[in-house]
Image 1: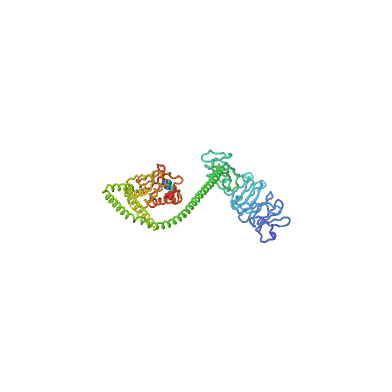
Image 2: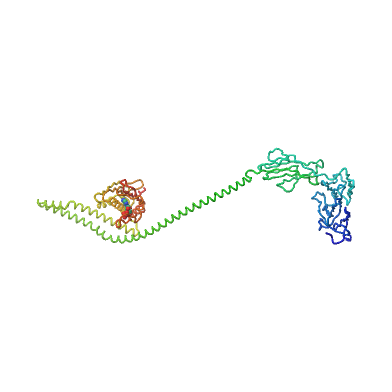
Length: 597
Ligand code: ADP
């Protein structure tokens, strides 16, 4: 609280002013602090007690018991109360409080309790109503006040001294600072084209047109040129700012509650109470809580829909996946069946190779003997004819020869013998052809292709089959003149033979087989119809599978149709299909594409 040394014995201390306060205490200002003589002791107050600087210059003890002290530097003054040996409620009076200049030459108090501060730039008066500043422009004899040149007359007059003369304030001409001026709004417009509003009304404006334009004025009858206005828009600004031209403008205000505040003062006096204009900027519907809620709701809904969509899609993918797995499993089992089938086929291939070898010799024997037999037959027929001629020289010989010919049907036998030899020759030639194709196939070679009409092979095959037919089964042939196609004669004949044999088996002892050959723009077609029972609808595709047969063991291998289809489809680029015959049985159609010219 106090300096360690006693100011009365401090030779370094330069004392500027000594004052007695209302309680009889002695105060002294000096370059090393503010000193107090109280109760027989000295105390010294410094920056440690709240002063701005230790070097203090002038002092005034005021009637209300408080004191004000000024500084040697241009720092204005500080006022305080002295209680319980401490400086309390210290109030610094400087530029922030409107003091025009900081270097102080006297402090004084008039009879009404106003504080007078003389500076190098005139005189400042702080009263209960506000703050006044005087200088030469107001009639002061000079701006430069002199040290301690102040006198307050108990009648209210005040005398001050400057370096250029003495000034006298008469109590009836000046009774302290005036209250700061009040402010009135002249015109307030909210929005773009609203009519002028009264400051008392709480107005509102939609955010789309949130502009505010206000004009105002301080209510003052003197010092017009020293009146200043400050503005702030509470809700948007916290700091006051000077207003130019006694007006304020704001635009693009966000939805909120606002209050326009305007205050005025006679510079450099204190600011008056602000005039206020409250108003609201209303949110547009899309800025309202409801709209925001709706937005959030919509987003949540969209999310929920997205999640549902994803789930449904995942379920869909799952089903697809299951289908793919099922399809793959089926493919796998089909592939397994194919492996088993190809094993069967290779076993069959080995069997066929052996068979072909075994067949070769007997077939050669038959084929090689047909021609000699035909020669022998011709010789025998000629010999029989000559013998008959010789016998017919007598009546008895003619009668015996006629009886023998009739009994043995020798005319028919010689004729049919020849036909039978033809068929045997044909059949052995066919077997040899099949045999050589089989060998070529087993060696991996391509059987020979020809360009021509397949009908002649078809005719021969039918002729061969016809010989083994039961008497109540007929074969009808209907052939058109076919355009040439490229084909393997042996292979196609094999197909025709297979289909004819199946048809024969289907009709049994009685029925009809119709063989046709015709053509369309695209292909040559051979059909084999029968009056048999036809094929059950459930078996229509299965009959083309290798080893599928409905025949008894030893009667069918189930390979015929699968080989036929392979020959027609893979060997000729055509098609072999089962259709329903108009006669009620089965109709097999062989289609071989025509040559594109
Ligand atoms: P296989 O004749 O040795 O049984 P195929 O492959 O030639 O072998 O014939 C398979 C099956 O097709 C036969 O067992 C039979 O059930 C059926 N099939 C073939 N042709 C006919 C037809 N013309 N009429 C009725 N069923 C037929």
